[in-house]
Length: 388
Image (tube, rainbow, N blue to C red; front, side):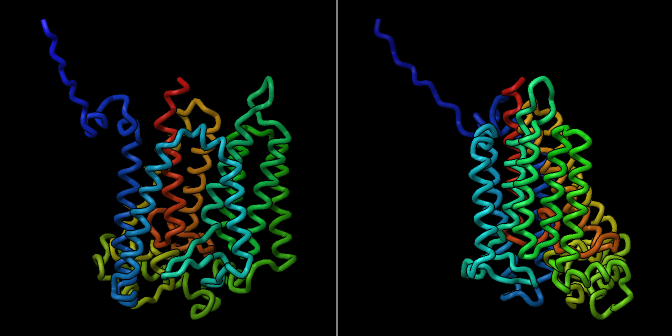
């Protein structure tokens, strides 16, 4: 009897993706939906705030869509990497981020909006290395603090000292640009990493003292540019110069307040169309939400950002690997702080620091950094069962 070879049909790509143990099934779908929703909203807002002056009315929108598309591809690639591999390459990523910050201080660097933080690539594109330094710093901090001392779950003293050194070098290079907003985010990343790692209270006190000394040094040596000092002055009293340093804050409040409950509709905002609020497609994009989509639209954006934060906290809590927990926790603190500062400065409860709204504001490098962070969260989520 001649046996016939039976051809076994290989499962299709969609069938493999639908399998229970597939990588796609283990992704955090709710987080990805929230991020996608924020990207769509951001694209609409960038279009609305730039259509009257951007080249061809859609020039910046096309560039923004390209940045988002490339960022999502990078996010997917990062999500496929085992985060134990990320731990091995953390020193390299950190060193590359320092090289980028160093190049900004050479003739290759360029000044945009008063901050010498950019490297021009040509063709209308530029890269801001300080955004990538957030990823580099949190990876090296997680690597240093992932190995606790023997007999305890607290990190070793030498590792904590190295964390402070790494954070100090990174923040120092950023403040030389100067970029106060990014420097604050980097400080929050470092502080949150130490707290999540369970350092002793005396280290927290030391960190607070060092932070206070840093603030004193910035003021004493006049590191900040005059326009940055003016921003703090306007925060204390916006009415001191409503047509000068207090102009942004005043116009921002007018734009958000005029939207009331339901807003004036997409493309219907007078403040947005008239460009009364400077940098409305980047740092002040939340004013477009308030004016054109009203209070309900603003709450929707905040809820979507809240979903990203809550899912990130869930990933950090359920990860059995210390390195993954630290990375996820620091990313959540990064997004939470940046969201609070950005929204806060548009409604007058925080000084203007030039921080974009994650996933919503226009900006290629910031978009890449944010989506790389989402990819890191997804990579940790996908492989957390490895340690069960």
